[in-house]
Length: 308
Image (cartoon, rainbow, N blue to C red; front, side):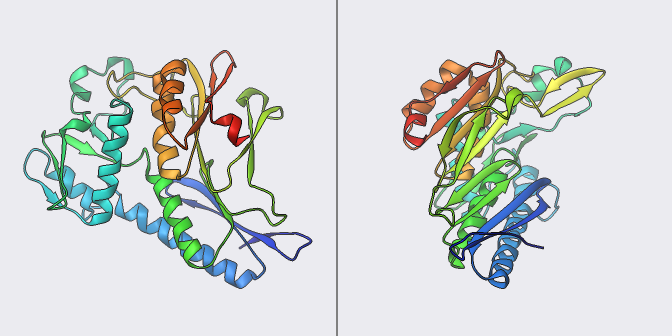
């Protein structure tokens, strides 16, 4: 069912909340026809479900599983969509010096992280993913290697849903994908979509309003995603090269033109730390970031001044 927020100019925000891809999604579209809005949201949900199935590592007939099963054996031919996703993921890995990596080695998740041996993560190396554009094939060169798109699938699904909504004539809307936001167009009162960025410990005290119209923002944080193993708390983010939990930063928010890119870049910057993370983001066009460390100090990239 759609929730409706009405404005004086006859434009409404139609909003639906649901659980997709294991996350809370909320899709909002601006318009004046509830039936049309409902159909648009249905189409967006269908597209998100399609992307989830496409990138699944649980379905036996998925192409991603086919790639993983043939690790160290042979290249696997994939469709253009999967090929481009892998290609973009490898470029982000190069950009972040391997901090972002879609490769992994299956390990026992019940094993305490401090006891994970280096050999259990030795196959985490994007350089061992070989792609052939002419043949549209993907080959994992080492047996035991696997790939997964958990680091960007949510963002990619949001981008695809936005594309479908725009095809259906939605000129303005917001997709909230588990807390990551993708927006386009303007609000019904013709003002930009904005977010108030705040310290997670002082959520009622924003330090900056950031214009995110036609942009996407994704946040990676140690303040809410953690697990407890043997009465010890371990943070959500793990350094792929070292195989143990990272700390120092409390949260990183990345603003970029696409949800896929924001989603993919948030955790690497979290891993890289303040200086290296800011240096990287400041070298890139159309990217901005807000970083909060574990002493509640706030750092922003140079682009935040232009987005605020």
